Length: 121
Length: 114
Image (cartoon, rainbow over all chains, first blue to last red):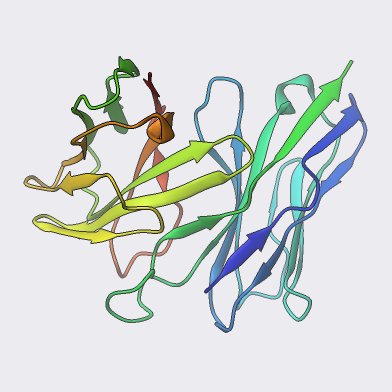
């Protein structure tokens, strides 16, 4: 079974600085998807960024980028120029490709336990 | 654009009572999910559905039942609520088996069982 581990329960960063959130996962699959979701105090789950395992290039979305190390099964999120609005819980998530066969957990998201990020003014 | 809508947003139950959470999506998505979120546990999958009329168990299905009678709706039922089911429940959906991509979430429903 796949597992996702976020080893940092809480982190803080000063506004305008850079912070990196860690995520490791365990799987025997060769093709899969990885995601970072943000959950602000409003509770809404918002997709931050996604990475497809067969793509070697690291995904970027404005101030958010990932460092995807497939061999090490590592998927860290870097937030540059941190803003107060980045304060939230961040969840790393794994998905087996939905076309990987019938039944089982294809297409389901498996989440880590989250990292609470506080951006301080 | 409504997206994924959950009702109710908040509910307090007594032990042994029953209730149903409704999830509705207007994106014509095939797949729908129910997760629960507990402090320090992340989100855990309760049940999911890959299409109208089909449901399957997730990681923590005990004490819950689901139904997907219409493609746009996914209902989560608690027949006899227990304090251990106090949690925040999230519904999510995504397009279909052949379409990779992220899940779209509702805003969550906070359930307290006394």
